[in-house]
Length: 171
Image 1 (cartoon, rainbow, N blue to C red):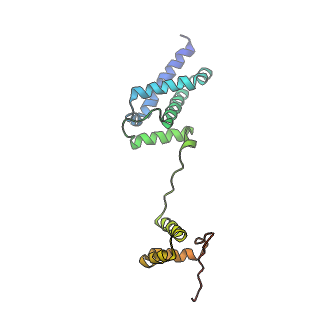
Image 2: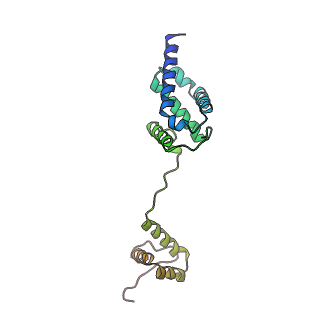
Image 3: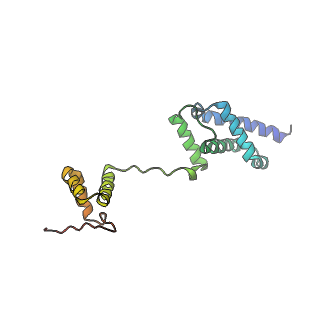
């Protein structure tokens, strides 16, 4: 065995130990043997040229294992057998953020709407879809609804192609 092959083997083993240690909270959610086999197979299939053309290092092999895991996980090729723990998810988020693998395929986070934003959206939807009688009934039943309706009526928020609310002062 050549010195380069010996170094590659040493670095590969060290990287593997480091990766499994770093991913220990994640690994408990998977069948370790199946995950390990899948990672090795993915690297052999997808990174053969990169492995042969890149000087061996622990960081290089660690990164390959991370790319392999994320690609396999994102594609559904490997699936947890137990729910992923919060610490396991933190590892996924950390490595995804450090190398960007899979970030472009993730759905955008759903914005968390405040109660005010939800009420605003409800009123705008109601104004466009309900009859005026139904909207007036909601206004008379709910003070916060009435206050937000009044606020929105002073803006362009309550308008559509077919209807527009116009407040006539003094009427």
